[in-house]
Length: 132
Image 1 (cartoon, rainbow, N blue to C red):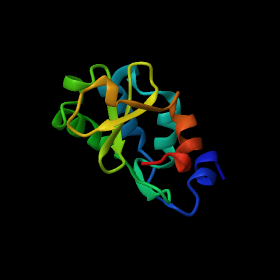
Image 2: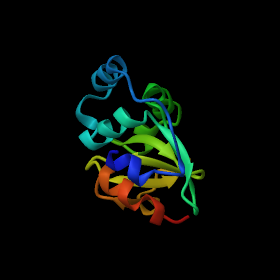
Image 3: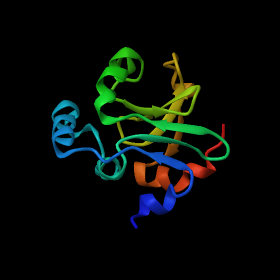
Image 4: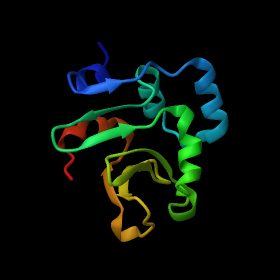
């Protein structure tokens, strides 16, 4: 059992792991913008969703990242960031420093950005403590 299986046990609806071809395509598309711990997560669950008991979190499938980031114009209002999911009213994204943050859909104001964790692994460890 890996750390993700322990952390997400009993509440996470995992997708099948990312394929090697999809991972290579994602790396070509996103370059070095995606942290290694996030890529490790995708090897366990390529996106997924679950109810933490306080919020419902969805992490998008790798094949949807480009389309959703372009559709929501993430680069336009969060330059250098990559959205990877949502918790209902908020995007969950990597900022330029690869911190995990969230901000309400449709807003690009820095004062509305909340840093959730300094990295993806820390985000996973704290995920059940995140409130609305």
